[in-house]
Image (cartoon, rainbow, N blue to C red; front, side, top):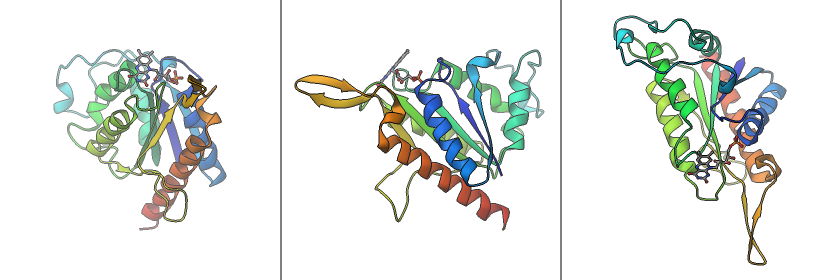
Length: 208
Ligand SMILES: Cc1cc2nc3c(=O)[nH]c(=O)nc-3n(C[C@H](O)[C@H](O)[C@H](O)COP(=O)(O)O)c2cc1C
């Protein structure tokens, strides 16, 4: 079982990466081979909207790193997308990455049948996390992935993907902040449950 995470944060190794690593670490304890891809490490040119991908399963842009990322996605059983909230949306890096995967979707859904999940982190408590997760989940559904969330019949009440926040609340009239998204046990619990749900579905699909 191979699970990769793709981080759209413009800051490598920060909160979104920490949440994604929490998912991957839990997946590894369940036997998964894991890898975190930081999009900031890759040269991904803008989609040209040339529409050549409507006729063939290859992007017309070949002099950048997108094909290599696509190979890793095709080799994975599970894909976790992570993006911080930027203006109640995914980051520019994540959106550009999504645009460039159209060659895996336009002729046929090459990622169909894989398992997907979404993770976000925002500064504010209600800073657009739900929209951001929905945007990533919609993208994966359109690509034919089975999207899992953090629901667990026997565990704490969680719901959709991971909706991290750095805002911890108000204390003595002042906003209190988490130092890191993974200092909040709620986020860690959600990330671990996401990994368990992914692993369970991947196993179920592979034994069908
Ligand atoms: C351009 C930009 C836009 C942002 N927009 C929002 C926003 O709409 N809502 C919010 O709560 N936080 C917003 N933030 C804060 C980030 O979501 C937050 O700092 C997050 O932890 C960054 O993820 P990272 O630590 O992985 O880089 C924004 C940050 C940047 C740089």
